[in-house]
Length: 165
Ligand code: ACO
Ligand code: ZN
Image (cartoon, rainbow, N blue to C red; front, side):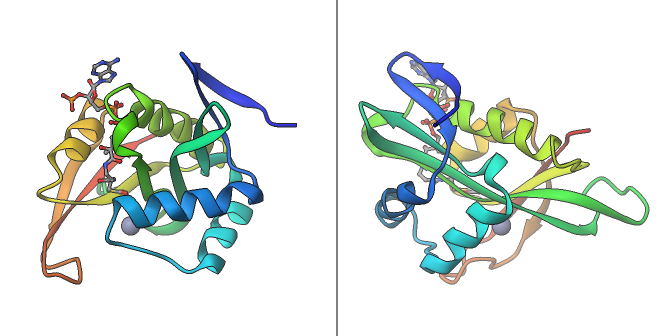
């Protein structure tokens, strides 16, 4: 049985199931230049199902977010290693953007990484991706670093992070 985390009009936000992964990969191919192997999607779903989420309208997947957890240096100058949630990828199909689906996905994933006792949540985003940067800023993420030539095409990324505990 699928547990719906949030309903936004006709759009349900829920945890992904293995049978959703093909649709997730299709959306990734359509919307982003960074792609991953089938195995990588499966392993993220296995490792952090609380923050591998899909948005579904009338039985069709229209958006996803997938995350992982890591131990590493704090993005907020905390001493020692911290446990961090990491947004690996998020996308919503073009025709379903600007309805609040992206915001709902990120908000629900924050709850997911909190449940795994993460101290911080972070992501990288292209500096030119103003839609995404604005969404993250609205949700409380702040730009902590600029990562020079982070992407294969040479573009730089912002590392954006939020404290979640
Ligand atoms: N009516 C009108 N506008 C609305 C409504 C509504 N009902 N609901 C939300 N909005 C507005 C929001 O206020 C926001 O406006 P703003 O940009 O002026 O602040 C805007 O719509 C977007 O917010 P959402 O609807 O919550 O987000 P959306 O579902 O459009 O998804 C996303 C955002 C995921 C970035 C999308 O643009 C996308 O898929 N882009 C391509 C892929 C991509 O770039 N992904 C991020 C890469 S970085 C990474 O993966 C870590
Ligand atoms: Zn990343």
